[in-house]
Image 1 (cartoon, rainbow, N blue to C red):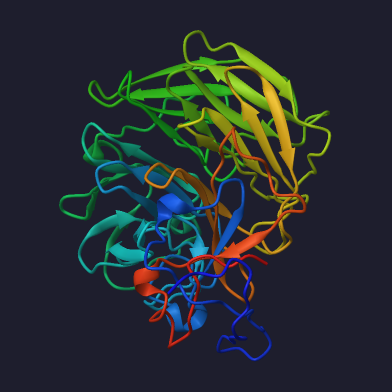
Image 2: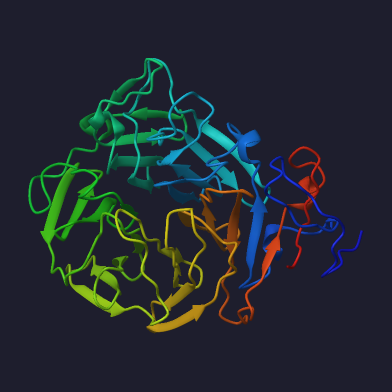
Length: 412
């Protein structure tokens, strides 16, 4: 069936009568992830409460983490506060791990929240979560673990506090710390060991030096060589107003730098920490940038490695409020772009899917539950005014979610 570009077929409602859904046309059998419209926001519905146990954050959440797995060609989600199928209060459930095949909209649970008798981090929340490509492992470290407040998972798992490694072959954790080949950092600025909620809750993997890397409050650049299991640390210049424990960190492997935002600095800035010599560069954000709400709100940064641009989904809250805009920074030329974002776009976990070439955001905490994509291209023109399209892979368009029908693309 041919796909009409701007046709509304019917009005579809989700289970909650308070959340009306828009109509969607029939899907084309040729629609694939590679055909995502460029510089256009795409919305993909989630099942919501009926989907608990079938995906990551089906009803939204916060403090989640994600990286791309090049072997699986999938996004790997862990960490955070959200509703899992196994009983808990919805807090500190980051030991449950999910993989998302963006092209096919297929979610795979790699590990449940709690495994009796198995080693696992003790109720991880906002954590380091990085992919060790040399050993095919996900590396997790505090941040914050609920075990520090005497929370446990309740199924008889062997839970601890410290660094853990998730093996993709066995789908098991090893750890903590030395048991995973992840000794705690030495004492210095920002406190000793891994620290906690106020120290360092983001991290990246550097494949050039085979190191787990993070910038913690202080500021201190910490690098763990995974082969020698030894740390090298460096106190770096703090330009003031930085919050690396709340700011998503990304690595530019080619440009040899870790980057993150400093929204509380005056003016708000992008911070670049060189992996060559530790030099810190401060780059003012565009005037359109708006501060996140006060308190412990995280801010987000995504690196589109294909086009070598940083994407800033300018959030106010963590999944409760729409984005305030999208910043685009060209790391090789220093050029900024700014785009308006449709008011329906909400998320608290953001990453880059290399398979589809799109930024992915999930974590919307109110109905209608959904997650979002945005595919940048320097040769395409941003939509003015901004538009949202709803999308499902054609193969699943007529079977997803209790008989609801979703279009491959539908422009609003």
